[in-house]
Length: 199
Image (tube, rainbow, N blue to C red; front, side, top):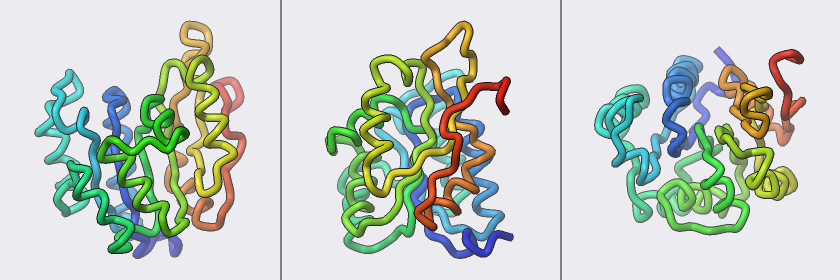
């Protein structure tokens, strides 16, 4: 059991990259088994859209079951995270390009962006697990902004299909616990971006 993760209060937020949900749930379970406490948060899209990767209700119930807590689903609930000091670190996994763009622009109009903003008021670290097909196109400028923003750390990203989807980046979820441990020490794991030939 990791001494860093043991007892660590992690905000665990999910946004709408539905195809990566299974990996996200698996990592939530690993973090719990490592002794961390997870505060579950879901975006409005995640909590209302049914997909082939599970219904909204199924996904809410699964995250609640893993964490043992009621999932935060509204801006008003998320706003209390900072004032009540509920989290030591905030994880957004998956983090879509839409959410990353809002964070880069300091836009706060969803449950997850409010959770991040509220958490940030105390200058605590945030870990993003990016999942987006246009990370190296239109969304690249937003990632660049966040790379240079204090308190933001990234789960190292894989060019998951660099031939057919050359702009796509997906976080290597297996590195999420190590990324959290590093972020607590104000360290960014590297390389941040790689492809399967370099793994």
